[in-house]
Length: 143
Image 1 (cartoon, one colour):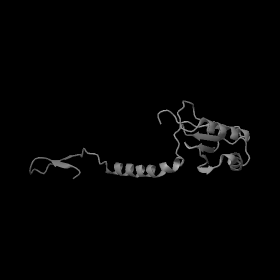
Image 2: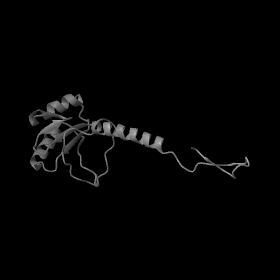
Image 3: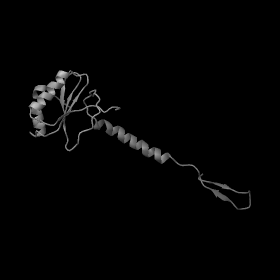
Image 4: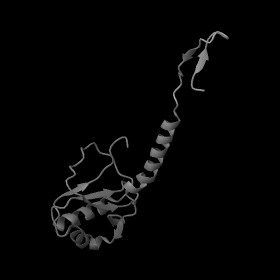
């Protein structure tokens, strides 16, 4: 019952006492729906190639256009926007993806276990291909 009636037995005079409880069921329902929405959409936002990024304290770059992402996994395999490609085809594929725009931003993600020479070769190929905005991605501390 929402409230109680208090008063002497049979005199007809009763006082209403308001309910002092809060019904949290609608709040819990809304929170569960939001939780399910975030659980479904969060995996779609992340990249599908798993790499263990090193940490850095640098500030993030500005986001004026959608960058092209080149990923090097721990085995040295090269991916362009989650599609595996050969290192020899990297520049030509990048030129197709950027529509020959040398100012296209390119982010390079590399596993911290990958050989330094492989990362250097990937960066050198991209720069020799004429791209000027090349950045290495790192994981922010505490993430």
